[in-house]
Image (spheres, one colour):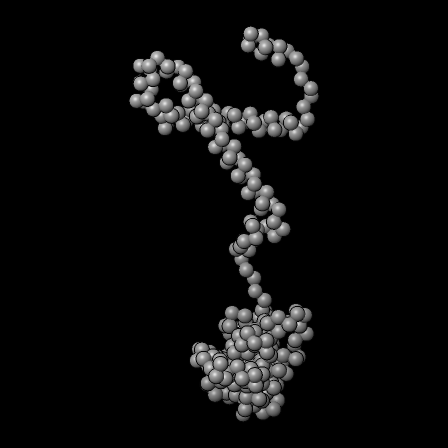
Amino acid sequence: MLNGAFAMRHAVPSAPRSWGRMVWHGVFCVWGRLGTAVHYYVRGRLSCCGTHVRSDMMAAGVQQGMDGRMGQSCGRIARGVVLGAFMAVTVAHAAVAQSPDGRAGGGHAAGHIVTMQKLDWAMAGQLATEAVRACAAQGYSVTATVVDTTGHQQAVIKGDSVPLQSLSVSYRKAYTAYSYGLAFNMNTTSELIAAKVTGPANGALNTIPEVLFVPGGVTLRRASDNSVLGGIGVSGAPGGEKDEACAQAAVQKYRADFR
């Protein structure tokens, strides 16, 4: 009876299949083959039917039927494992593909690389040179230091007859103008002092290494959106206000190029 039904089923011509149905048919064929392979592997490695259980069942005379049922169960489990893995990979790939910036679930940056904005070395050098030139035109020999958004020195120009300490002082002014100009949204160390950010509430700021609340530092900002690019500090003129005026003159000359 079963053989006849099987023959009749395969004797009737089937309707042409669409490409989508053919693809899915192929996927399930592969799935079935993989499930069968895993089934035999599981039976061989993990003794799905158990040696001691097998001997007991043989003694009871039901070995053949039990082997068939347990084999089908192992096959269903193996196929379920394969299908679950296939669906997990498919869903994960779709999640990444749908992310507009290539991030999985809005996590880390693509390639794990983060870029930062700062002046290039050529502009940093021109800026420091112009600050020294502006003070030299008034008879002051100074040191000008430019720091980038990491707080490190990017360019240092030293006048012909500056005191040694001006190297450290100009750096600390630039560092303070950058870091606290960013924190308090101000543009010079003079503004920070006037705002009393070193008063009782923030007195500990004076104890931070490299910080120096003395006039002569100017925050560097991008021309288009005013974002912070670093800082410039000048030291050596007779008075911090004169140092700051030279730094501001340099910034005003080149700020249009901070793009």
